[in-house]
Length: 426
Image (cartoon, rainbow, N blue to C red; front, side, top):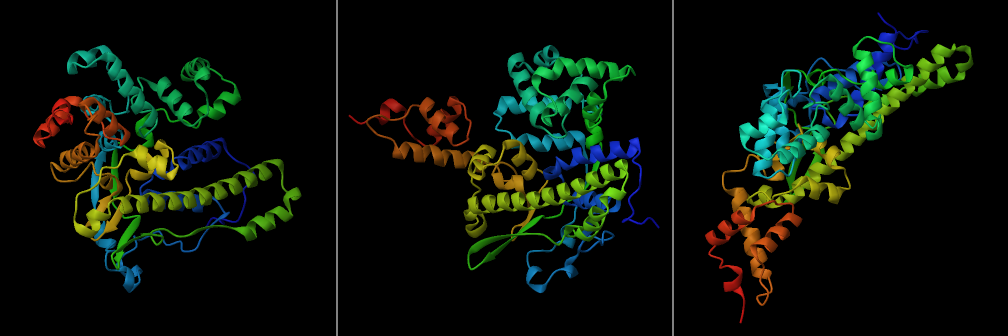
């Protein structure tokens, strides 16, 4: 049996590549569903002696029997496990709602997703897309750039391997836009089997050739709540599910032992020691960051939807931009936190994105909510200088709601609200 506390004197090229790829995966740790995270922790524990687990039982999923009686009410964890098959396209489709796209932009995004190949590449020209869906080429390019820069896995929608790698390097801040041409030439050489500078290789070896390799073509995903909601004396309280995976700790005893005899180690052993220590500390830090931010976002969403949970009211409409501003998070980080995360509530197990108020609500709720906002805006306006539909549109945009003026006019008519000229007081 392999001794985990025994440091090997040499590091193979394969292992070095493996460690670098793992570091790349750690940078996307917010994206991981909970069971993928368990697998990540297990793999790090098996290959890194500086990682300790408080409870290293990975053979079973926590069941109801693993929780205290007071936790069993809303927290039917074992019974909540659902298995579903997902393709790369399914995974991308689910992310569309994370963007503040209007209807035209959504149609473009759906069409682009529908035309990627099995590797995640888009091999169809903008001209052809424009002809087929009758959309402006400039608008198609704009939506495509947003998807390339924001969607997971990074590199999806690239036209080929070269662009896929460039997108990954840019998104991981390994290169700047000014470096693109230089690295395109380097990638060309590498793909032709030519020698490249070691400095380039260190960056390129972190990237994947195909986006679909980052995310398997068919994902077996178990839906497991990462947080749960309790209603206590009409107060909403959100708790993190810290029983789903073991607590990860740094092996201080091994670290102190190795540090005390650091000069007895060879240069290769010291480098190995340094990398393992850094990897262990990085993992622990990122897991704590994930837990803190997932809980923070969950609490925010629940508090914004109090009426829904306490009074069975409608869901409020919340945009990622609004949450990002209030919680001081980047849109990119927030998108990863919201995606594939679930909360166990008295109303059932819900995805975080459901609580944005844009998915899973009954038909007409979105329109009803917007109509209520329009009525509220009109009720509060200065009757000597009432708002035009264009001005109402701008007010809604500030609230993160994007509607065309003709839609606003339609909703206004349905509310029996007269036009601007007829609302003006004389």
